[in-house]
Length: 188
Image (cartoon, rainbow, N blue to C red):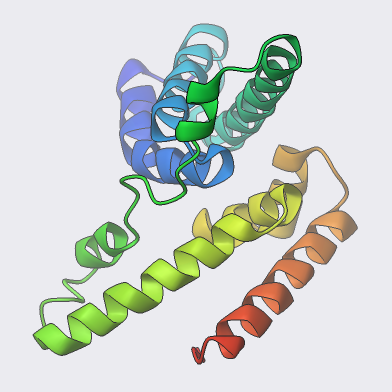
C-alpha cells in the first residue's frame, strides 16, 4: 500500500508530463487540466490501497480512459447541439511549450547563443505541431513510448491493445514525423 507521501510524490513528478501529453491529445489546455486533475483524484480515491510500484501504470491507464471519455462526451455534445465557441477553443498552439522540458534538464539551453536558442525554439515548435497532427492512436503510442519513456508492454497495457499494435503505431508515427520533418528541412 502506497503511503500518502509516496502518492503525493508520484503525483508531483507526473503532473507536468501528464498535462502536456493530454494537451497534445485534446488540443485544449483547459480541458487537459481538467482531465489530468480528474485522473489524479480518481487515482487517489480509488487506488490509494495499491503498492507505490503500481501507481505509474494505473495513473496512465486512468488518464487514457479519462481522455477517451472526454472525446466521447464532446462527440455527444456536438451531435446534440453545435456551439460556435467550441470551434474557437481548438487552437493547437495554446500555452504548451516543449522548451520548458529542455530548460529543466541539465540547463541545456543556457550554453547556447541567442540565435541557437531561437533556432531550437522554432524547430521544437515545428516538431510539436507535427506531433499534434498525428492520428490519435499513433500520437498516444508515440507520447507514451518516447515522452513517458514506457516500454512496449507498459504502453500496451495503458492503451488497451496488443504489444504488436503499439509497435505498429510507434513505427508509423516515427516514419510520418521523419518524413514531414525532412520535407521541412529538419533532420534529427
